Image (cartoon, rainbow, N blue to C red; front, side):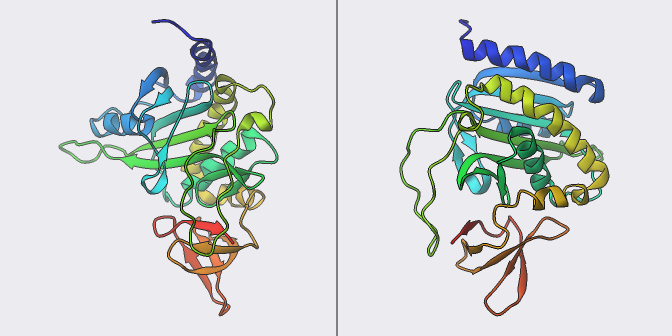
Length: 272
């Protein structure tokens, strides 16, 4: 198989990631694939089959990448970074995990990166990347095996080409075109971004396991892109975003002055 410059860069930086993470995460491995349907789908298959050793799976191209609420995520070699991290995890409370992941990534990427609840990385009102968090329990006779966390990340390295327009949420502003991390950090490569974000991400997930979302609440608030802004929900509701709860739910103050908590399983949200 011919090794492209993009592949060589990913392989080189993947080795550095392994060296940084393995001492604190026994059994950790890194795999780089030229193509896969979806890194999350592949690691979820493995987890359900009982493979729960920690692994980072990086793909140059995803043919069926997935985002939240069934949305697709397209990747091109060298133009985007798509990877999934799987590891056994047993926090006392899973609430707020996707927000903690977002905090870790944003802090590793650039001071100007903001977080759009619940799972988008933003820069200047434009999406830089997304997060998909899933868990799986292996099929075992005892049923006592630990759950496996699978965190999927898609980052635009370069600004993506224009795609077909997405129908807007009624009452919301039309979506802005996506952004690329190279607009903030000139010349950055997918391999460099991988090495930049993964070691810190592993450390933060381990901290979440012990300390929960409370350890990330203030850090999220510092990068909250929606706080104080009028928002429209995909179920038609409107209000003003008022931060997040201790469990990571979005707090929305409606016109009647009531404060409601919205969970990511119920709706999506856009600023008005």
